Image 1 (cartoon, rainbow, N blue to C red):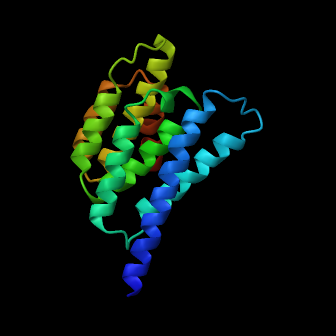
Image 2: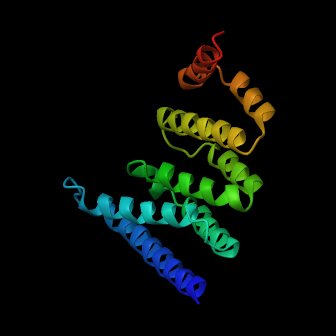
Image 3: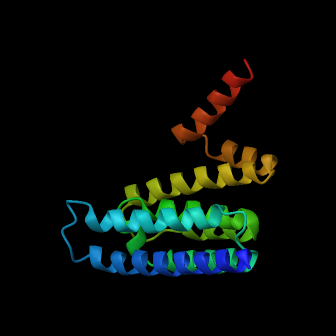
Length: 173
């Protein structure tokens, strides 16, 4: 009975968080959020989704459904236009994918690296973040060779070079 009660609570948490995040993203485009009231609600909703994705008792089918919602939401450019919500959603997707379908998360990252029609600076910044996340994810799922190859092809990015420096320091090399 306890597992059923927990599952019901997770369902409520997911439904409420998805509703709040989705509706507040629509609202933020028409609002002055200088007091961060709306963005705070979005952050809280995403934090709740992160907790759910990290919960060991969460059934895989619920994790897969959460991942699918994030994947659909990230098709909407609005997530990339305001703050770092897209990065936070990707962290939730990363947690969910680690438990269900890692290959699907890698495909999502590759798809998001496509040009968006935004400024070159914005696209470059997003791609840097996505590449770093992909390297981190590949390493976390034991695909170090692919992560190393990706690092070596993106040495022009200072944050990636820093990873190599930190690794060398750790190895006292």
